[in-house]
Length: 278
Image (cartoon, rainbow, N blue to C red):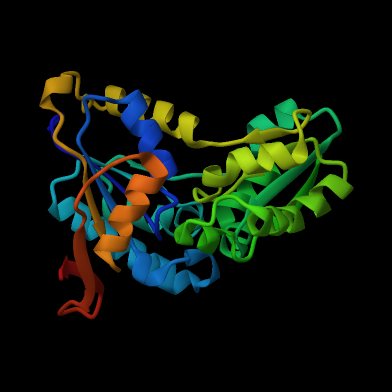
């Protein structure tokens, strides 16, 4: 079982920020990544849609023999993590929560900014995290409409990107934030631009390294950790949209040359959404 793949999924390419950290931390693991680009971004979709899609992707990953699943999407984690764990109680399923706890520990001004989607901010997971760790600080919630789409399109730098980013960053700066949490897996792909715009005094937190470390701990405790790098299979990728465009994004964002598989959504006999090869 330790040689089975780990499944990761996101609405698009954002989860590749998690994927690259998992590759770095767990070189012996085989990985299967699914991008639901037919429905990107999840941040503006209903909770029912996000949950149905997440369950459908998880069904596909389990059918592919995955030993664990990483919900590499803050929005899907906020909405669908518990339903996923209920459907697959035997499977380690990791989700993402915004790095509010370390931000609270780092802030000196007592003001923390969080960049995320509307669905993440509305989700129970985010609210519980803020209620648990951030009652003694001011949290400035910045909805970043359109930022995930910019990353999907590859618009990662330049004057237009900087102007868009400053539109998100300025309200947090004006409020006195000295620590910013990236609450969407797409956002680390513009982290260098963010750091350049806000200056070195601002801490900008990317949760991906901590997620990879946590995954290693969970696999080790479950006896599922692969330990032989020679046994790792080439990474596999799938998308519910244009596979050629996804291949280009792979090369651009994480430097990987790979042919992704195209998947399509269908309704199963019980009217649940399911993925099949295109």
